[in-house]
Image 1 (tube, one colour):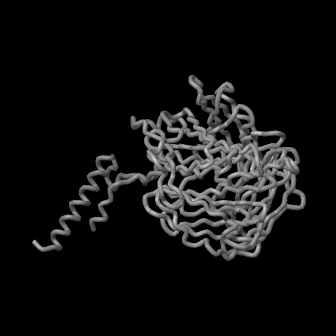
Image 2 (spheres, rainbow, N blue to C red):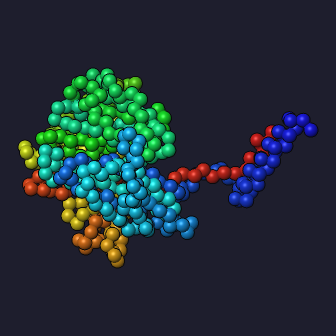
Image 3 (cartoon, helix red, strand yellow):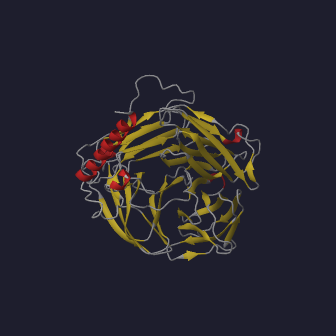
Length: 496
């Protein structure tokens, strides 16, 4: 028997095995099979990266790990695991001794908290599987209560990816902005950093080909990439090989600071939900990622509907350039969400955007960042909510929506509390989530749209200290609890 005949027999046998599997899964005959459609199923594994929190001796960091309870996710009978372990340093060397998991979860629906005051606390890399994987979320909250860097820095630990956009970074003299790159995988990642200002791309001296060793975290001070001292820049992080988690730590020597999460993917329509009512200054930073200029309408979605900021009805953004707009106290005492849409004059062009928000004045000023965020989708989750100071903002953009808000406490015997509310199109609803802990601990919040159009959400956490309105804002995109799995059916046409 010649080699061609053997190959044909092998291929036929393999195809028979494939079609046999399709038959066992109920695919039916090709003639009778309906058109295949994707099913939404719980994810089986999640990965997160948390940046090194702070090197300040006055810092205390709280990690809160949480997976929403979902009967469908646990149908396999496997509880699974969810834990965070220390990452290696930028030299690739792992921490000494046996690593101890941080805030390991035991069951869905119950947040677990861990606290550290270690100024050399490392970055963390986390994995979750089984019933603990769908929607797994970790909140990292750091309070620096003294010194020039006093602030509340909060971030939801990042999902690794190959590309990130960070509008509103800075290399100005009063700012120290670090991008933290964390590689969760077993192979090195190679990353390029690009900065874009009002005149286009800024030449960087050391931004290309940064190697992030396996299981390691590398912080890069943005002001070391260029001698230019410029505010209102956009940082583009792209991995040539591998993937990383990326988050920017932005500290101002005169106005506190916060973590800056990546903007939602480039789009001609962006929403930045949840600007606090008492914001004293709001700066919009927009970057056009495509080949065309962008002309955008600027609107504030408040409780009663859209408001046009006086003097800032539109913004023009040139291709490949960053535009900053000082909106002042745009909320005028009423919390709202900033919405960017095409103006209709020159078509649409993709952009990314973020807000730099200040509360307080003078020496009592504090800063937080709010990037454009993707819609909630199936469900969004945020952990580490406190009895006082936690506020949820929900925005419906194109049509009315109904939303279910569920809070889950870490205290023994604390039962989840649910609340359903309506959000009218073009408005923002702001509420304090019901506290199921009775003031005895932190709690997690999940947001699930049940009907209507897309919903955008964020959580503000206020932790005032000595008269300074310290706060942080976390956007709430979909928590990745479900993934689309294409349906399959047998197709004998491939035998021909």
